[in-house]
Length: 500
Image (cartoon, rainbow, N blue to C red; front, top):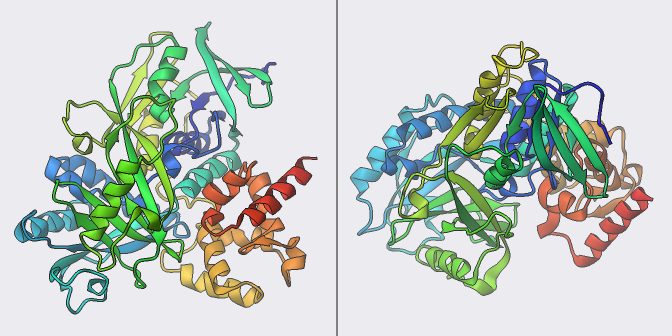
């Protein structure tokens, strides 16, 4: 069935962070935008990151100074526009004898502090782990270390809020709608698509943006276009265990094989450990943490923590496939995390493809992509704007989250501290949109489980494109780690009743 008599100015294929970022930017510049995602928003790579907004300290030793500088500049920009879902995090890097020397670590951290225009985040300092709170959980041989700054984010919500802002600015967002075939006719792109309910659609547009992530080459095939870059798919796996420490610091650990990994406080009661770097054979294969990867991360953590970490301690794993530009690197961890933007005019209408990238740089990538399209799509007449405009719910100072949590607690005393904290750090100022004037759980339609109310679930369905329990529990709220099977069934029954 035809979607509309009028063609879109920009059709974005791919509802991960790059696609949502492009849709937001283009809609805000005056374009008529369609965003197509074959599954749920952020269902793939963009919900499977290490949840960091960071420059990538380890990329300095691969001489990727430009990539690191760009990401570090974006770090504070993103914190400024999304202080509810992004917050600063202090990392502790213990020195391990026999690996990178202390002077080299200090030099790298000095560069990290100064090449990216750091303004608000505190600088690096040397620490004595015998006296620092972060030294307590570590084995006693770790005496020296460094403390430095980076940022944490809820990666899936970052995607959803970009899509929401795009929709608020007029974009149409269609999830679970797969672009089956693309062709150019009379100067317009025609996109044949189908959804998960068996409906077929024909969309037309003046331009197409290929932001399909790991499937970027597959989409080019469907458009009968030739890629300008080869891609390398690298799987990154993470494990989650019950929390290994009580403080709020995260750890940056070195391993004897030269790799690094993180141990990060996660969802109040857990510790997130990752990531691995393994070549992944096919984007169609759902990535899963292998037994070898789980063992590798457990063994690495056990080199540092006083309490050994074993596979039996793992309560959850997740894996994502990073679509990296092939640069001839031998080891997966050495492959570039940079990106390439290619604009193809061979068919007579723009086909822009985004290769690679990382979550921290998404806003800059989207801006550059829309800039490239602007000369060919007259509707993109507006100026750059995304560096200053807050994402939905984020219109408060970077130092304002604690005050907002206190306000929510005062206005809704029936919420626990943990629930009020989760709500503010997910919705920010928008929390009041669905909390309303509620004076208890009954006014919110009842509690489904662990602070998730029917009113919140309703908001996620009507404003954030959630349709399944996984959408709500693992991408929109991260409550999947807490829900019992009975509570999942209760949520499923609520969703089923809503559909009927």
